[in-house]
Length: 412
Ligand SMILES: O=C(O)C1=C[C@@H](OP(=O)(O)O)[C@@H](O)[C@H](O)C1
Ligand SMILES: C=C(OP(=O)(O)O)C(=O)O
Figure 1 (cartoon, helix red, strand yellow):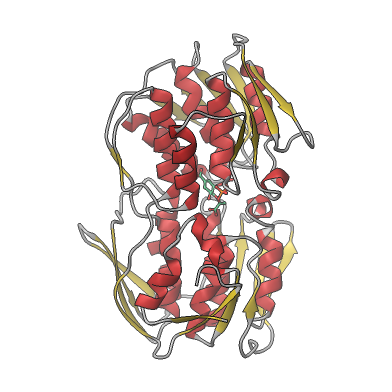
Figure 2 (cartoon, protein in one colour):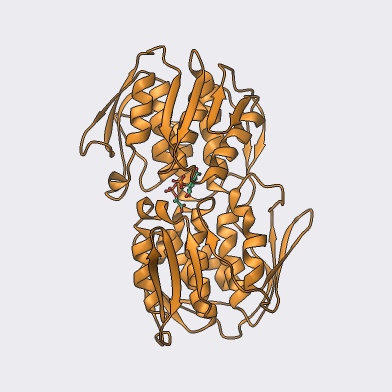
């Protein structure tokens, strides 16, 4: 099924009950893997994700790097390895998929060069591929970095911070986007014995050593968003998702609050989370996705399916992810009778237009989240999802889990 050019997804009953297997968080896993490699020690990381983004990084860090390394389409792998190879003085070519070579990395490379990294662009300035040519410390430890493009640059710098002779003082410039991911990085550094301070827009890390420590990766809240959408779109739903915690390191654990107005009730227990469908009572207020950009596609597709209009902000970073996600959403929601329109600078509205097409065909733009966000709409009418294998980036078992929950997923 994963190799099919397209799948047809439908749900005969609209009634869902049972337990779902989630992938582990690729964000937590990839931080733990980088920190373990930087610590020079070996310790167990439990519940490593089967997501390609994590499997790839694990492979790359557990074998000696050759002359050329590909981060494929994984943003965290590209950004975290750039800092890791710089700090460990490795000499190699770092590249990725054609799309990865359109995702900017200049902010991170500029910062690393100021610290002493020798990095040369092999294609367009500011974008992969790069030749990493070792590290000669400059004695600088104070940097100002833009924080409104991708938090991954900041996380990448922070994780190497304690290894630098004078540590690191980062002043964040501009709006801080995806801030929970920066806090996740600091929390995981703290788990491994490294203290940092984050006050206002200044983050300081003194020179320190990472301590050997076991780590267990939590289930992935971003992947959980598709089950929230499924619950909201179902006739009846009662779904249990093991391995989620309320005191999560992941910013996407905002879902219980975010999804309540869409009619999803969340109940935490020691083992995980139970989702049930309840009537929609509240009007949807404007949603700001700047702290949880990976949830935007889920919510836009869901609102189109539920036939609710709403406003949103904080979508800027979506343009430089696996695809231009704003353009991709604009194209695909039309097939469901909705329009996503910029109504004033950086404010978007979802407007309902006509009836959805009978069997909409969703193009996925090499973006796992386009496939996963639109598949739940099969609870309203059958949908065809192109290139279903894209889900391997973060949730390889997604289609199997949908089938377990009563969806029909057949090769088209
Ligand atoms: O640090 C991380 O693990 C991530 C940070 C976010 O990216 P940006 O900081 O580029 O928004 C998020 O979209 C991505 O899926 C994972
Ligand atoms: C943006 C994402 O990933 P990355 O930036 O790590 O490729 C994502 O998983 O939605």
